[in-house]
Amino acid sequence: QVQLVESGGGLVQAGGSLRLSCAASGRTFSSYAMGWFRQAPGQEREFIAVITRTGAATHYADSVKGRFTISRNNAKNTVYLQMNSLKPEDTAVYYCAASDTYVQPTTRTGYNYWGQGTQVTVSS
Image (cartoon, rainbow, N blue to C red; front, side, top):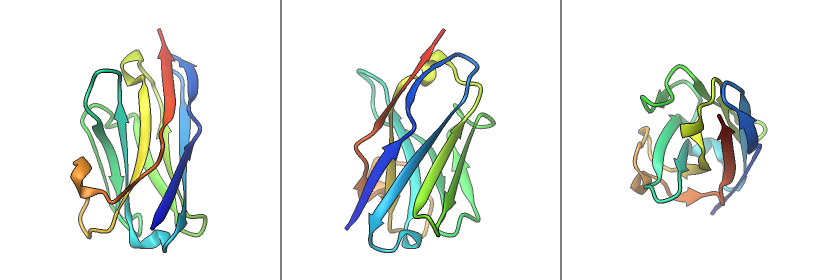
């Protein structure tokens, strides 16, 4: 079992930045690829970014490429999502997730564990 807790969400103006954190507890954090998803009201949960177990490789959705950066610190059991140049359309609940696969899953079904989510609101 892995427990995931997101933090760092909030209200920010368009063009601003936020950094989300996801703290993991339970089984060995470095055994999991970690991903970020988001879900806006009335929409499907959307893949944002994924990072491999060691942090050597990352992959992003086109909608956030060049603006968001995923990183991890295995010593602190934490994965981060740095979000820059935020837009109103980035408003959503953001979730981190853990996957025990050796690939970089980009769909919900590729993940075993989920956090409870943190709200990000970008005002225009």
